[in-house]
Length: 429
Image 1 (cartoon, one colour):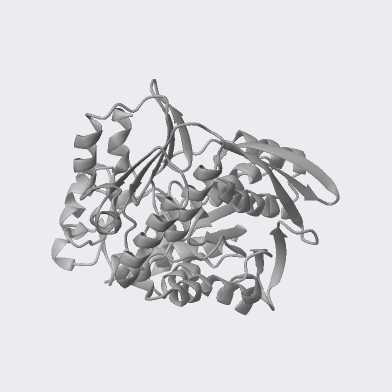
Image 2: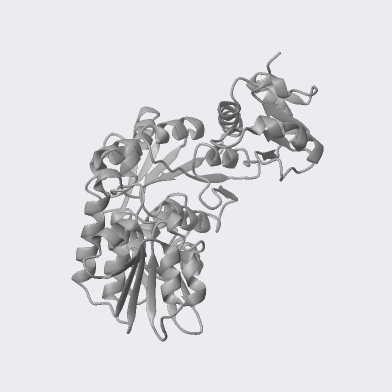
């Protein structure tokens, strides 16, 4: 006999810790036997029970060893249904955040500001996919007053799927850009997929936060309850950059009052992320001085626009991910900084499909229109496009070269897709 969601939910209320890894089984937790390309969680169900799980949810009855193995049709779908059911029971107000660039930073800033007034659940790291989103929702408790859920996608329909699980009350798309083109097929495919969040908000009479300055997104928010932010007056929250050398400094205005924010964020492109967070927090009646303090005190982690001082150099580490828009923004911002001895270390941008060669050539053109003391490129795409610049087929070759370079007293921008593992260079700098 297969259990239904209501029955499973009653077990979840008794044992609210969920794990999908048989190596991390808290006593009294429930194990979900998910499948991947190279593994089948069903095979680890008995191990999970031995390690302390109270129940194991499986979708292959061959692995049922006793009543503590709960057989369902599909473990992943059941996990998602359970998360959605839990969300409906608690009715916690939820803000969903997606976008090509800046969604994790915006999520972090939004949660940081909201925490000044509320008990907030928010996505940890970037657990923003079809597994991470339901796992985050299942961490909701009656004590949480609001939730901020990040949603990522690299194929059409994924935001629609995540939105159906989350059923957000509020939504924000940070921006759209030419990323994951291999999966989306085109820039228009990116826009359509991200806009699936808008479709849900419109159809369900919910609320959207939108950057008035964005020519792709703003027109798509018509007929949705919306609150606007941007760099032109006439919006709920409006701001202007004061400086970015190296940290972003700006002011914002809300309800006729002006507040200055001196951040720990590198890059003028973070201005719109900060304004989005300020707009959301203001909408939820967090007072502006508290918001300004929260944004000022936030320190980025996980190789996202981080400034790191070593014994030899100053590093600007932005190596968590890269696409043509974020790469160009980082390079342009770095070029504008009034700092000496600038060095670029760049890695390939992944998942660009047929556009990859052309997009890497454009980055080379951008580099050549600016002045940098040294330029080092890693990855086959940059190697093909290098046009005389110093380039290597992969990061290991770059590392071998850097071991014999004498780089001292420099400011170094490190930017590339996560899979390039440029962080492996840090110990040499």
